[in-house]
Image 1 (cartoon, rainbow, N blue to C red):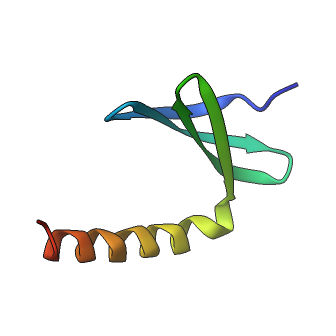
Image 2: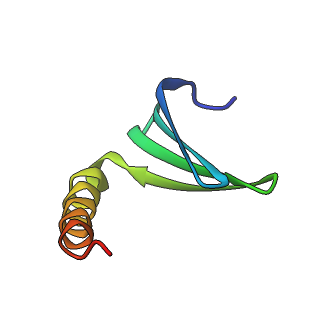
Length: 70
């Protein structure tokens, strides 16, 4: 049985759709980030203990991108 989604958020940009799912299994919470592009789906799973670090990295990248907008 697949782990049920606790919450799902959708991001649509250019020709891609991303789904960010918060899920939980016997090991605990995790994020599933899926990309739909040209009818192909790819997913990455991030365990709960990696989420804070992922947020730090994304925040750092966001600052870099906002400082270097073309």
